[in-house]
Length: 458
Image (cartoon, rainbow, N blue to C red; front, top):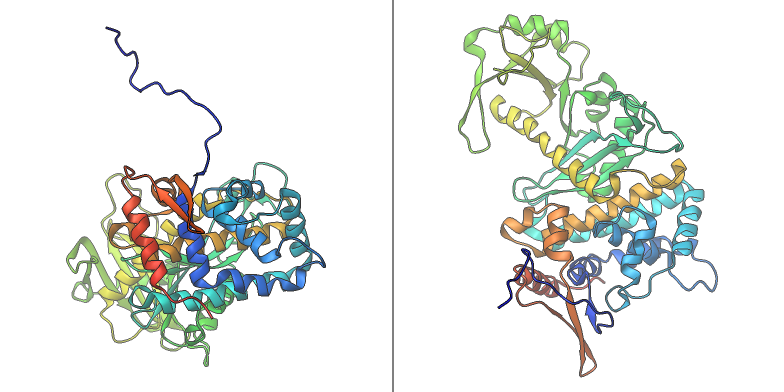
């Protein structure tokens, strides 16, 4: 009797397997593209860039790269992952063809970017309508978070520069629609900037906000139903005035730097004016209080702005700042929302931290680095990354339920997209059979059934 040595079974490997499809679970993304109408929208948008007698459609070529990035790719050459499975993804352009397309679009500048963004906005409006109660605007409001992202560069690239964290790379400003506690989020803006771009540059925040609003359905591009949230980088006179401009009337919740004037006003707030902060479940947040400031501290700011400050006992070991008071950590933000308790307004602003989750997902989906050399090329890459993130947000919104609705890109890839299958042709139909023993096969098949029930575009 021989004893088996080692912890894993020994398997003999042979090539030549037939009708086996790797990345079979990625058919979820393909069906999402079809139901959203993104393939037809982006093909129509990029039709002016299709050359005479061209074999590959520019829209599909760009969308193929986005699908590859959504599946875990981080460069143009990773489109080969799709090219290896023509039964699932159809004909895929070669690497040189994809590279030439990106160069052509980059040379067109804003015209090509506007075409891609218009196609994404068209598909987004349809997806939100299909999602119904699961859409981010189901409650009648939309929340957009603006935040900067540091993207490191490990080689000499155009506009790469030292960053405020003493690293080297780029500093894009991004916007994400918050799906709330029952979902994730989707990108609506990406403004590529040099690494030494300022964090609180008002002009950049206005540009990013314009890009984000253009991605929303028309009814949310102005008015109080759209909330713009930022950290203290957005707390500038110019940006707040732009948000509150008559005719635009956007709601806002922007962080503010605790200045000496604010600090002196906080010291004058009586103990009776402090309200306990709350958590998402409604329970009191231990060791945290909120108060509203008034008087001369609001001079020079738009009419209707409210200034709220929170004081909280710092975590053990945390160092206090010179602007903190009485051993309490002070944070401040401004809003123009009326009619809500200040504790709810503070909680709403604190939930802006969900943007950090969206940034982490973006880094795992093509934003770990910018793979191309010129700024114009990398602006196209950012649109590809956003399209990939759109699909990773739309698919769960339309097809997944329960805890799976909250899965981030890495978990979606490992549990769903990397599932292998067997392609069987019978009665002129192609059937993709997934492994019965795979724990998440049921999640995939249920999701595909939900997508199948949605109406086709057009």
